[in-house]
Length: 315
Ligand code: ADP
Ligand code: MG
Image (cartoon, rainbow, N blue to C red):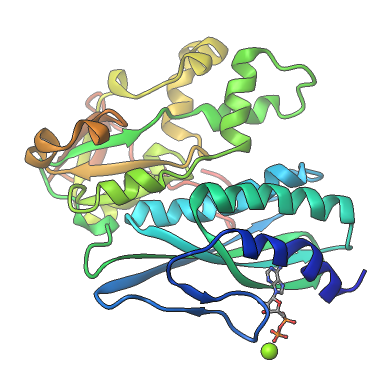
């Protein structure tokens, strides 16, 4: 099967099934065309996933298809952007039809779930690597940046933390218990907080998605905003399966492990008080932004967690 046949069979059908408001020409020409409505900003980001670095070797292709778009779309959620479309560059060692069918199936599910149309891409041979560029839009000037946190703002996180990181210990489990299955699901099927991100536009002062761990990613907000924060370990949202599996170590997973793709936000206290219930119930307040620099957990300094660095050993 040649390159063009492969694109035709596995990727073009996927492009046809999900429309985006702003994408006016999808794959097939030299470029795609996106029309940004007057008064909106284009918000975009690119992410690369390399086999053996970002996902395990021989990883299930349908999981990979979902995961690739989910982790890229999570950056749009962190900016409060409305997701629109994406491009996909696939590098793979060979045209394995079974692999391609699985990959396209997972990607297609994600494309529909997130309302993001495939706009185009590139297909090449080489070591398995995926690069996705994601496009979203916001009303002009309303994207949520990392730099907007101010002293007195509350620190909040969505969902529960640490589950996906704990899943790494069980990736090869043949018949997982219900608790193990629950954390594995968080790793294999991350759900980017797109609706929440859009909903907190105009409410959150800063936001980041938690890909490297809470301490590391909150640290990015504090650095960009030139502030500090204190957080309270008792208020960290930890799931029942994680508590059962990891006992006292669950807290450490919630603080330091990545791959959850939840949001960490800062919100002025007044806006939090007046926020709709629909938003409040998706978030846990875990601390407060302070002018004193540094990150403090239960009163003790705990900063300096810089997250994953491809060119240094981890922490
Ligand atoms: P060009 O050589 O002009 O860059 P290509 O041969 O790379 O064009 O691609 C032809 C068309 O197929 C383009 O519209 C491109 O967007 C689309 N395409 C190629 N690979 C993919 C893919 N993996 N997913 C979606 N569209 C793709
Ligand atoms: Mg061309």
